[in-house]
Image (cartoon, rainbow, N blue to C red):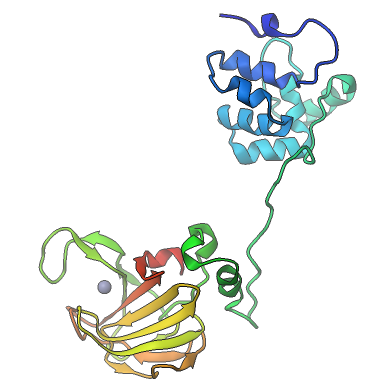
Length: 273
Ligand SMILES: [Zn+2]
């Protein structure tokens, strides 16, 4: 087994940052070594950071701040500095040995953030999500919080997904939405601005049901209702009272069964609320 010293190049300015040698010394049998060598130094740093267990984000942060240079300094082992006070003198003392590593080195760091949701435009985040892409392409991290609560007070009593059926008692019942506690007659609120596309009886257990289309493949449904406060074709705003909770259809008691559909398929509402 070769040491890092044995692998180091003898002399002359190397176009390849020495961190590569550290990587290969740690992982001598890495089949992707040559491919990685051809990549930019920033990518190597982030991969090293990832392989070292400190994570991709930490690697990016290190590279962006220059702290990553510490991994190239040790001559015998890839010891990571433990604080910035260890780092700065080392970098200053050996400027000639620093590889050209910076955030400009081909790195595309995405610091974008979801739009700030203001009180004046609570649909802002959802609009931005859906205008940029179909609802099916939205990541869970981006979608969380983009829909408003369908009740003034949300207490989840049965989650989305497979469960023991409250109707049949059988196991493996797929629960297509999320159930929230609500006394019969509680106001049910539109989760976001949209067009009401269905108001009526759902033949497959939903009982009295309202469906709102929010555009770009995103729909919400409200089920087991005792009454309606919206009409098909109506445009509703986020938080508008569209119906009243009940226990119609396949229901064992007053509650709201709330669904989120993306391109016609139900998804876990917790990913959007
Ligand atoms: Zn339900």
